[in-house]
Image 1: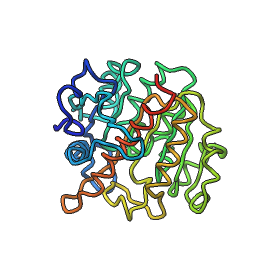
Image 2 (image 1 turned 90 degrees about the vertical axis):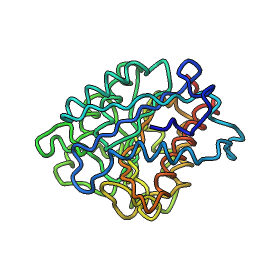
Image 3 (image 1 turned 180 degrees about the vertical axis):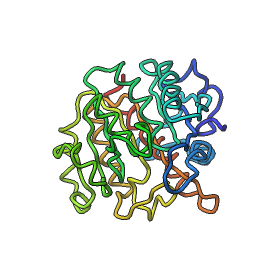
Image 4 (image 1 turned 120 degrees about the horizontal axis):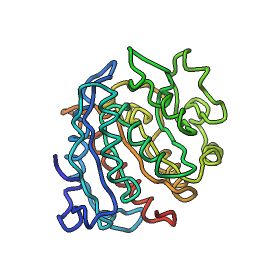
Length: 284
């Protein structure tokens, strides 16, 4: 796989890096559109076409050092994949700002667990179209539809942009921690309320179907009525200013060779988030 951003070796060696990007090309529990296992490669290829100077922060973010690790390739079962991601994440979490690129959403739990064990007072901020709170789905507790159910067993989860849910999930919804898309689409007053629900240390998981399909059609389970680019960026910027973000993932890209724009959005989103992390005071 291409290294993220196609950046020079000086800034992409592990010894010179503050960031590790860990690709997880896994699509084992997808239930509709297949192809998220091609997501990491598409994101990395698209990132090579980014301008590495960021206008908003007036900085060349890549100079913090961004190392692209070898992909986690365990595919025999969601349980074994989760264990493999957990073990690989533990090598980096706490030493580097660790970023997972998927792959479907089931890839997130292993690294969330690794962060939970490293950081006290951790919570997870989920941006997503789906709450992913099913206790079990299609015979597995580690299905992509269950990832936040497993996470909620460890720590608080704050959900943003949710607009699809099954009735079996309702008993597991904590009302003050969920911000439904239809309640927040026409104002930004919810920003502060959501941030108030976050603890000191925050891990961010972004399912790309949290964005509206008009700008992010390439996902496994597209859902109308999603968030727009600048709403997400403005919200994330405030989160990074007010909390210590310790790691994040970007998942569920199902690339379409005839439309590379969603691939580029995902790669640019990662770059913007790294800029927010390392240009604000909460640097750990």
